[in-house]
Length: 253
Image: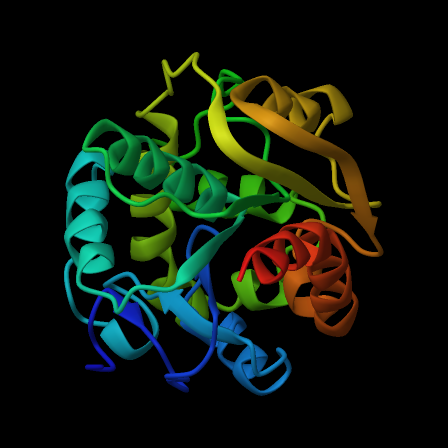
């Protein structure tokens, strides 16, 4: 698969029964998840969403609205070889993954087996603070208040200049696209969260109303960016929460 496509599979596994499709946080890129390709069991193929404007797609214009992003993701997803798929979305990634899930269901396309919302309030929770319209100085200050944010990097003018366009575009997407979805998705939901994150527990648990089958919150050491800081623990917890789903599919073969 083309490395600069919207969905990239770093290590294709033709015989893998499952696919884990990962969606990154605001301003993030596929680099967070690429090491997972060698850490996951051989039964799970890794694919990652890599948005323009960052990482290997730096220099390309960012998406500014969720509808266009979701439609392009839908078309890219439909081109993937068929595998039973798990969606893993971290922070903004969970919001984007859920919007793709809504579109797949609307068009009666194949749905993922399992949905994992990581470090994210449910999309039905209104945003209390709007970041994307702030001045650069205030925007960076607000980002620094997020638990686990790389404050030193954001304070570096050269790094901030490179990162701000994609960060601002991503925050615009999530701040201007509230979800009006009130149904229940038919697959299983898992919720991951950092012990030191500042997301309210009730906002995490609000995901449960959107799915027929759910679990309690799976807590991981660290702040909002535990997916980077606690990679091994994140993968371990992820695989543990997937076990019932994977075993059910395997037993049906």
